[in-house]
Length: 94
Image 1 (cartoon, rainbow, N blue to C red):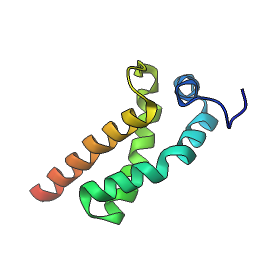
Image 2 (image 1 turned 135 degrees about the vertical axis):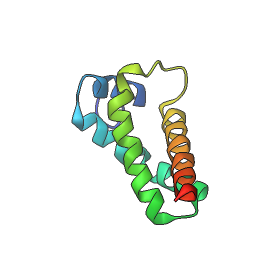
Image 3 (image 1 turned 30 degrees about the horizontal axis):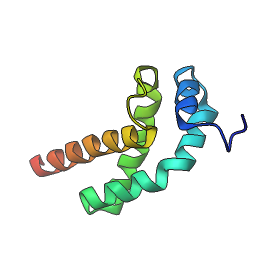
């Protein structure tokens, strides 16, 4: 498989084995969508930029536990939603 045809699930499998290039490919494929989603959730481009980057750090950490019960994009947006809500809650408390 080439990098352009390799599935997201296969890339997550590579991430689980410590492949940084696979993280970069997933970042290139999904960062814009995750970023736009978080902007809609938070109303803040600056907050969205930080959270979107955190999502891909979390991808690195959680890849070994990815069970494939959903699409990778759905999984990433779920992580983004949780992080956005957590950030909004924290901001409200401050």
